[in-house]
Image (cartoon, rainbow, N blue to C red; front, side):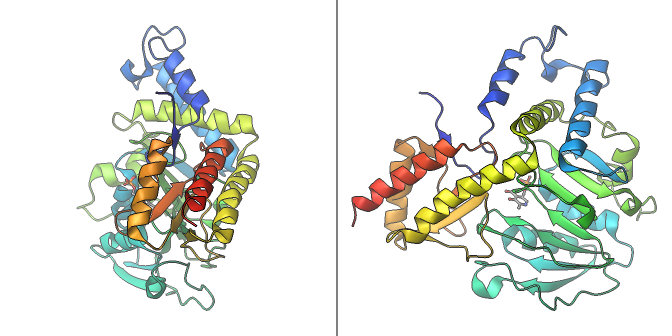
Length: 360
Ligand SMILES: Cc1ncc(COP(=O)(O)O)c(C=O)c1O
């Protein structure tokens, strides 16, 4: 069987060119006589890989010098704990609740901080981002946390709240590098690599350096302190070296496409193809409200659970995989991360149209 169209929410599809290059270098990375998986993270070859990846990320995303780039592990989920442990000064943080991941981040932070939910989309089943007009933030909050793209509900912030001097912390796990990024709007950005940047095992943190504090409560583990990793240039312990190598390749691929603006245009086009189809369909319905719709995770239903199941099964047989919605919400979800091709989205819409024709 050849490669199929993979709409999984993560780990997710990678650019085929990246996989081919990695395959070609698997046994002997650039005459080192070994795979990147096998080499010391303290050697010159790997140091070159990690430094080039950081440089390429800084170029692509326009990351200023006063922001640190940290290559960590533990997934975005570990950041739910590291952010409150490291950013707390007054012991307070405000959260915007846009669904499961945002709520998990708040729940974890509440173990260490006084957490207040400043806005929530719960009343509308998280089908839209709550209104940010008149958002009441505590002036002495240490940070405001949001989840910029909600992987499960298929929503995203089209505009960010104005948090004034309060640092904004964003979970960008499912949208990072999908469009240009104004890093200065944020105190801290975090994301797991396995959706838009590579493979599982690597977590990226971009943080304004002045927010990294040295005086932290004694209970904070050394491995969970940002200053540990900053001082060691992300080489305090063995890093996820192969994931960093793949990340570097994904960045080169993005640069080759023309960077984040070019990527954003392609992503808008891909999402447009699917939303346009959904909005005229008599059978399928997008679940996210216009104005809050994700470009990365597009959620939809038929309104009939048995029909949803039949659709997902038929799609799988047609080479369109990973379309089952998250178990908490059901329905369908097509994840159109950077590496998903336009042909993949067209194949999905063709299949949806034939499924619909057969039932109407
Ligand atoms: C928005 C968001 N935040 C956090 C997570 C958890 O990430 P991880 O599995 O890397 O801990 C996910 C996973 O899908 C996610 O989509």
